[in-house]
Length: 185
Image (cartoon, rainbow, N blue to C red; front, side, top):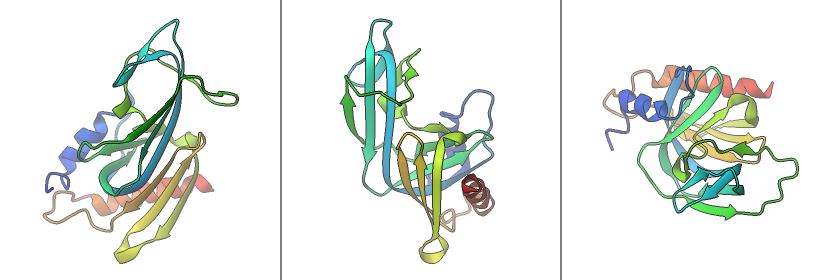
């Protein structure tokens, strides 16, 4: 558990999902209460663990959910919101191989996409709404809703754990709150 509250581990975990050419501006340990990620992918086929490019493939809608409390890292770059699990866990996946895609953005699959990697990085411009409320003992409750209907119910703790492994937690937490809060103006 103490490895979770380590800034180097957080930077490594978030770094796996940061788009090329971008750098992490702020990242913290947070608690996920509920996640519901949706995506529509085209020109692909589905295997047991991933989507693979297939010129003759169809469209696959993926819904990735988790309704439990677990530890995550959340970070921001200049243009992206990045999320990574602190410890690998399971999600509930639903697939639709013949979705109604009217009005939906379809992401063309050009390389293998593991289901576990879906929904770990979003453009900040895809955030439709971010609602923040004060929580217990200085925490901040945050509900992020994306334009495609995906959402995250998160808790940003006041402190970054014991032992001093996350010395920039307060500074980074305030930067993330300010950036996400500024999206609603």
